[in-house]
Image (cartoon, rainbow, N blue to C red; front, side, top):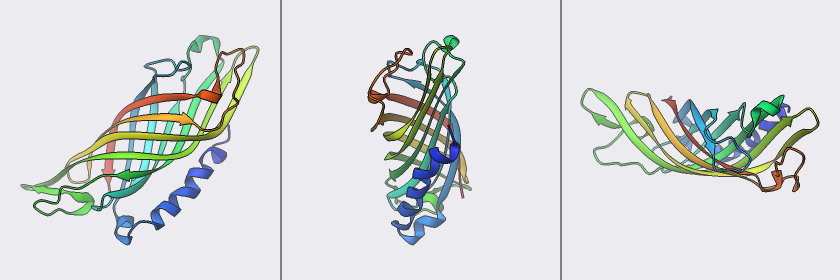
Length: 204
């Protein structure tokens, strides 16, 4: 799997989404990283850890954008029978995150609290991008890259300044797959899973 191919479509989409937002959106950035677990798929090894990363723009206005990345190095069931077993997903998403404007607010929709600044920002998120899976066994090789969609809900909490925690639950579904199974028992034509994650987030 070539990383450049995986990220090409979402990276091309993200600037278009940013340009579609008001000019104020471009100055309200955030970046984050975290750990998650995957579940809810017949193919997945429920509860195995994956890694998440995201970067985006979320102004005080309710609309923002983000690039969300998932990498799961041992995603599929029965990992002992695979010499290679991984999943990656790169999604360009739109964020809907209303801001509580009572008492004013500053950068990234903060509400001032005493000597520091803080905010709690719940959100809905959804979009599409690329999903890629690779499974290697002694008798079979599956390497699949296809379009997918995702939708999620979560909250970003920044108690002080521009640093805090993000909690996210998200559903992934493929749009185009092989439509068949192999000796691995994995049918990518109906591939889907859930991801729950928690991580750190910083605003800039």
